Image (tube, rainbow, N blue to C red; front, top):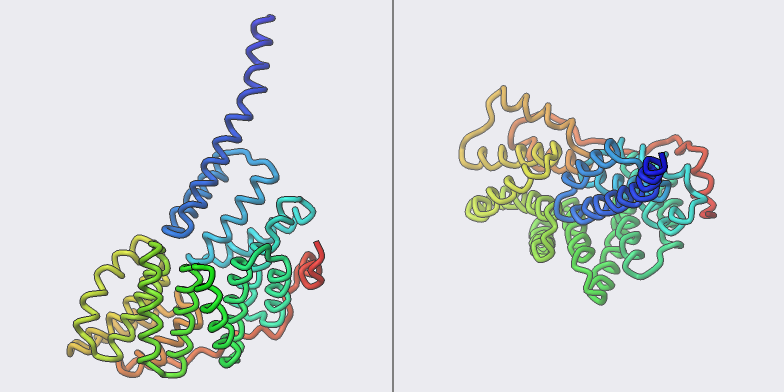
Length: 334
């Protein structure tokens, strides 16, 4: 009996520590993959949640990583689900250490769902709590995206110029790439194709230097669109195989759908217009796009491909975001 009691005591004392080490290591692995392959981070996180018991702090960390992995994969329902869970722990010290990450992600979700004014509250709070210049840069980038969605292009361009300047001084290649990419989108919106090409080439080169797979796919895909618009067949054929391979590895329906539209534009350029069935397929793919990507393909590809589709109306939610915990965000008191 004594030996049995000692055995059970050893299990009770030792195994939780081993379990905690396992959780910490696997959460760290999920974090490490966020930049290079967020789809793998997402899968790892699902496995962790289903297989392991997490402490409150580990749950908070899990949900922060989950929302960060969900965003580049356009899994917005997963993102808001994690935010709902996170705000149950808003008095927890680890939550308060990560207010900028949490309210910044919330601001992005609100923007993407058309809650423009509420997104401003959230991003302003994220900026107030940003612990350093690098984190402030992330928030400024989101504020610029918000200004662009609100069609305040002058403010957006000014904010991106600020991001580029500060990112260079901090040698932050990721933020520098993001700012180039988003400045390119504004140039495309204003139909300044040569300027857009310069920005996207700069963004792609920077993403390649830090091996950010999502960035390489995103900027590479828009560059392919630009090559179609400029009838630059050689540049298109050089970039397309690599971009398609990387996009396939992300397991993102949105990226693959955008590539299919762009490649249809390229095939039309070669004298191979889409058949009726292919046109129907392209129209069906529009459901995978956010408003920005849908605007791009409708604006630049639909008419040449003889596909009738209206430009999407910018998403603006006339109602206000309604969660009981959002009052704390508006007041920015935690």
